[in-house]
Length: 154
Image 1 (cartoon, helix red, strand yellow):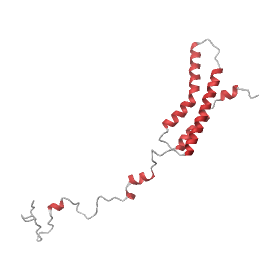
Image 2 (image 1 turned 60 degrees about the vertical axis):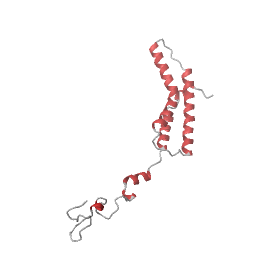
Image 3 (image 1 turned 45 degrees about the horizontal axis):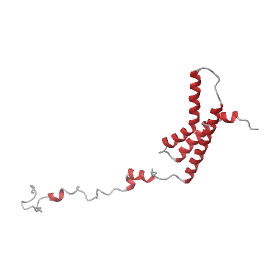
């Protein structure tokens, strides 16, 4: 391949200014810097990945103990709601009211187990502290007050 600046034999004419060997010109960017080297401090992806949490990292033993404690507490809540719902009855002949009360009893019994499952599933990508705070909120919200108020302690 020849250009106007090169003789027909392919050599570069030293008398022509800015003469370029066309074979080597196609393989360079025109500067001596290595374009493939990128410093990690200037690479936002590398900087972000350094502090990123591994999503496959196992839970700590403290977190597992916390989830176990809340799981046991929610199991006790379920039993308390079951005992409370099975002893209370509605005195009425209205079928719609009776059906409504039965559905609410069923949901009250399932609420602690549903809360525990939904928090673990919906917040699985959240931090452990966030999941434990949601568990604590559920323990406060789902506390079986009717069980304590209808039982005698003497």
